[in-house]
Image (cartoon, rainbow, N blue to C red):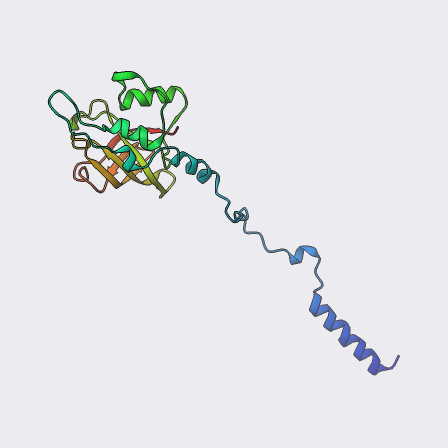
Length: 207
């Protein structure tokens, strides 16, 4: 073979070597970062948390249907109180214990049935614990409209409730911050925002 031909063949071989690489299959793999790869959801697919939350939030009726205000009169209390409003809004009808059914007795009954959690969900029921300073010996009930996790233990909530003023008035879209580790609620809007800090929370009724 002529020297010129050898040079041409060598240049072609070098070009092919540089174009396709000389490493094995492992050299084509992306370097590992030590983390699990992120998996993007399919279009329209929800996470497991969202799959649980969405139907829960759609069980009940809207606020307008659940709030036919009936002012109280002598010997007759106003309606809707916080508990029946929350039942209507959420669609949760279990643990009806009659006249003595209050926020904490409702929560205790649902806890026995395994229907409570310390983690809020959209459409769940927030149960505030007894608070003697604010004359709430049986607790208080609110309907959770939205939940945004800010950390593993802290959540920003938006809730609606009635009878916060003992006149069955309605407050909607009240923002608060809930700490699941401390089990306390700080309210940042509405009639209770000036004193509604570190309120003890019993938990949340889910269904």
